[in-house]
Structures are given as C-alpha cells and as structure tokens.
Image (cartoon, rainbow, N blue to C red):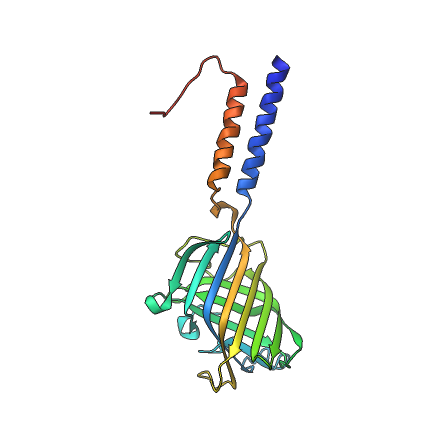
Amino acid sequence: MVSQRIYRVIFAIVAVLTILSRDASAGQIKIVLDGLALAYGQNQDQLSQQLLPFSIYDSHDYVSGHGLPAEATDLSSVSYYLDGVLQGKLDVGQGDFARSDVFIATPELTSGQTVSATLPGNQIFDLLLYDSIGGWGLALNSDTWKLTYDSSTNQIVGDASAIVCPTCTPNQKNPFDLYFDPAAPIDVHFAVTQVSGGTDPGQAPMYFLGSATIIGTARGADVIPEPPSAVLTLVAAGGLLGGLRFGRSVRRGVS
C-alpha cells in the first residue's frame, strides 16, 4: 500500500511539473503594421553609401534610429496579437500615435532578383508609439535583409531576422504590455507596392505603401496560461494532495 501511494505521488508530481513547464513556455507575439510608407532611392548615409549605394527608408525622413517622432512616418494602424488572439489595436485615424522609423541600406534592386543587403547591426526597423523623444514601441536591429523587387507588380518584399536593440531605451514600451524575448530572434517581413507617380518629401524616385509583420517569442513571464491548462494543473495538484492522504480533510477559502 505504501509503495502504491509513493508511485501515485511521484506520478502526480511529474504531471504537475509537465503542465507547469508547458504553461511557462513562451507564446508568440505578432505585430501587424498597416499603412507602411517606404521610399527607395540613393543612400544619403555617408557611412554606408560607398558599400550600399541605395536605401529603403520610411518616406518622411531618411534619417532613422534615434527614436525621434520627427524622423518617423505615420502608419495607419498597429495591431498586437498573442498566440493569434488580438490583444489591442492602435488606429492613427482615431487619434492614436504610431509611426515607423526605417533605414535599410541596399545594393541597387533589379527586378526578379533577390539581393542580400548587409550592414551589420545597423539596419533599422523601429516602431514609435509615443510622441516623445525615445518613444520606441519597438526598436529592432538587423544585419541582413533579403530584398526582392518585382517590376511587373511594382512591389518590394523584404525579410530579416532582427534582435531587440540593446542600447535603445526605453524599448518595447507599448500599451498592451507585450514584450519580445530579448534573447530570441524576431522575424520581420514587409511587402509594399509602388504608388504611381508618388514621391516622398525627399523626392525619392520610388514611393511605396503596404504593410509589415513582426513575429517573435514572447518574454516568458508575460504569458498567461490558458484556462484549460490551469484547470489541468489544479486537477493534477489535487491528485498530488489526494495521494498524500493527509490524516484529515482541510478545506480553506471555500464558501
């Protein structure tokens, strides 16, 4: 009998630890940026223009990376998801503040070809959510972007693996309290289509509108266990307590 009780206790402990381990595992955050306005033209950055003569940047200003709202460009909206469930949305048309701050130095884009645009640690893709200096909702650094231009659709598609900027503070400040794991890579993807006859304030020859998605692992402490998992945890814990067979049954906090 004693050995059976011991095995029952061990089984319950393993079940509880397994469930808690699963619940503590980080979820996935996805941020969707709509109304992303980008320009493509000559690289104005003196440090990188010799190596990468062109650049893609948020259309309001090619200067980027300082967390300055004046250097960023209005988005239409920003939506935050956790494990596929919408957590909140910022709508610029309704008075919310949301801007992109982008700088990607690149070789010249040729239709039908994918280029690797590499500028270690200095390719910038930032999201500003506050109308103040250092208003980073998210500041990302990346080394390399894969960029493809298709002249038949007048579209540029970009993909990169980024990290949370370690020197941008405060970073990841957002009204939904969702934070990427700073130790995990973050996937960034955008697709923008050329606006016919459009130019940006810097008179870049090509002006684009579209959207972007930013996907990565949530910081573990920010993930709340789903209700079914919490129930299973309680059931397993109940099995543990039952297996111990205390001398008397005690119920606390039950009305």
